[in-house]
Image 1 (cartoon, one colour):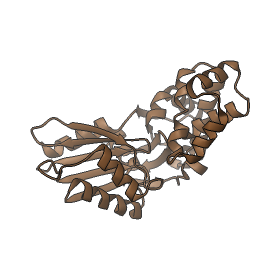
Image 2 (spheres, rainbow, N blue to C red; image 1 turned 90 degrees about the vertical axis):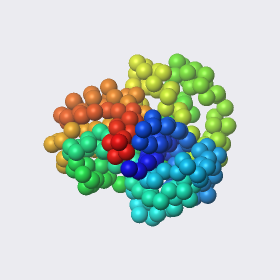
Image 3 (tube, helix red, strand yellow; image 1 turned 120 degrees about the horizontal axis):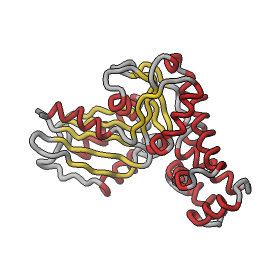
Image 4 (cartoon, rainbow, N blue to C red; image 1 turned 180 degrees about the horizontal axis):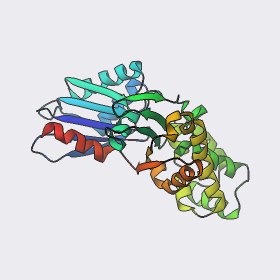
Length: 284
């Protein structure tokens, strides 16, 4: 029997769970981790501040970490070293957040798995491993359908005077009317992807307004066009989605699946609940 520390990390937040035999799961949450945006030093500092570890009896035997930006061997090595050092763990496995999504949503079934959160990603999962994955260009050049993609569109519509009076007022009530201050923060913020994504909740509040609906549908449709429809398996297997954006706009996803004559599987807000069930079997 081993104790497990499992993590599901996006660019905005990381969910942690410590599992031990005979004990209830212990849940934590910290800021997000993305090694393409943060340095190793920045990640270490965040962990020391938000999730300090004693280095004594609470040490996990095994860490299974799933995270954004963790698909390449280089980034996996960096993260593995940081996690071993911080948690005093003997064994650390680092995989992409898509693998967590696939395990949670598909289990041993095949399907197209997508994440729509702060960023976006997709893959074809064959029931055991990720067989094909569309390249991710990140928040600067890609991330269609994501929170930062929608946030960028919101900011453009406001700055260019595209919003009508209702949406203009709604924006200013939430974020102020000083566009220079907003732009200054965007270009000085250490995590611009998170900052852009912070505008997306406005769309949840303004559902029903035709312009808000257009932004939501256009952004998610771009994700279908640039990602999902690139997989030949999309027309043969169910589509699975996870992430805050996917869950908030699951009705739009369902409508697009109908339009493209694709089968929609499950849409979940987070993979963590299913991951806990999976790993509890290993400690019981």
